[in-house]
Amino acid sequence: MDLISPGYITLILIVAAGIILGKIRLFGFSLDVAGVLFIALILGHFGYFVPNDFLQLGLLLFVFTIGMQAGPGFFDAFRKHGRQLVLVSFIIMSSTAIVAFFLNHFLSIDPNLGVGLFAGALTSTPGLAAIIEISDSPLAPIGYGVAYPIGIIGVILLLNILPKILRIDLKKEEENYIKSVKEDFPDVVGRTFKIDNPNINVKTLAEIELRKITGCIATRVFHKDNAFTPGADSVIYKGDLIRLVGTEENLKKAVFLFGAPVQENIPLSNEYDIRWILVTNKKVVNKHYREINLPSYYNARVAKIKRSGVEITPSSNSCFRFGDRVLVAGEKSNLTKVSRLLGNDDTKLSETDLLPVFLGILGGILLGMIHIPIFGLFTINLGNTGGALIAGLVLSKIGKTGPVIWSLSGPANQLIKQLGLLLFLATIGTQAGAELIDTIQQYGFKLIGVAVILMLIPVLSGVILGHYIFKINFLTLMGIITGTMTSTPGLGVIQEKSSSNAAPVAYASVYPIALVLVIIFSQLLLSFSW
Image (spheres, rainbow, N blue to C red):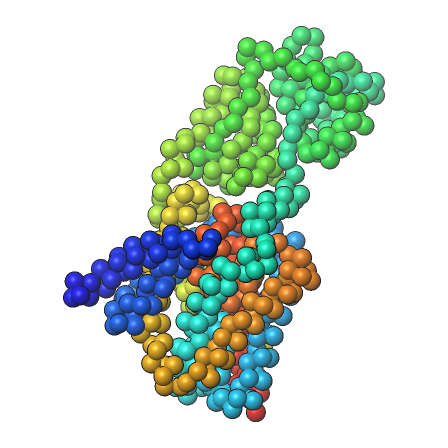
């Protein structure tokens, strides 16, 4: 057995065996990524360990890539659902704190030990750090040590069995989430209109204020057997055919301007084309469409944008983002020039530039070191994890800084995120396995019972509040619960079950708030203990 004593060999063995275990299905149930944790717990109990540096590295990789994945949708989601997310997170946290308060009192548990159980059940290391800062008692870390593995294992098990118990179809929930996203970003479609309105005869598109009135974009006009890409100064005539692109709501407005849509197609001239072009040129990333000005320079127009699987209607304020696919209409010779301008290089998406990852993580570590005063009573800091998450969110929103593109292709993000999660689970599992049995033998099962209850309360209160009262999408709700519990492994379980951004966006929305709330409630539990 000395062969597996070196930490890196133990790590490799845990990950390999854990993945195999996670793939085994019994009665339709499998451990998935949690198999790594259970193998780690067993080896940890027998004295094997993985160096703590792997834990920190894994956690930073996982959380930062979660931030980058969630960033594009985070700010829009928080703007729309922020109050609801914060409310649910606050109720989950406060209900857990209230239960912890009464359990500590009626079971005569030392307040320092009890608040350690509270932070451990929520798997909040920043909460423990804040407790240690205001308390010299060694009991808080012991309570944390008892509850932490229960918090990790319990949440993983609950997230695996709750959908089955509640008979929730996660695939349907994913479809519902995608449908709700499309309500915010409706599909963009094209339609042909025959100009019947005499009031707009012999007028330019600028004069009729097409974009302002309808929100549509004109991609083609057919006049006297000639099809062309119109510009703002293009003149239209009664009887012309005009091809408009926009949402269904926008196209309904166009009916009042032009007349009813027709089934006729505008024939493409030999010189005219419409093609999807991939944005991979770093020089145009983050530039507004009005800066590039394709209509003036290339007589070409962007009709649609596809970003992260969502179709968006372009405007002059739209920005080119790395990895966007844009539908451009114009003359073939000009579209070739536009393709060269925008990049259109698929190989760029398959290349993985790790510089943004490690620069972003470094920035997150520095951000996590900043101490933030809270009401003049105490200070908190986000720590490495919170800093990396915020850095990922903000940088993915910024998109580009100088030559650095703050984005990863989907496969690259998934690979780095999975690697980080595996490193984290293998390390934390050996640490928890080494202490779990001894702690139970020393302090009895009373603390175990309290830890289990405190782990169950946030999950069950979250399900009751979010699923039955607020009717929140279940994937989003699981993101809220794991974010409130700062449970990175829990989020990993959800990500194994769904490829949508529902859970990561919700997790990223409440995680920073949860970091602050757990510290505040930890200090309140110590201050108001009986």
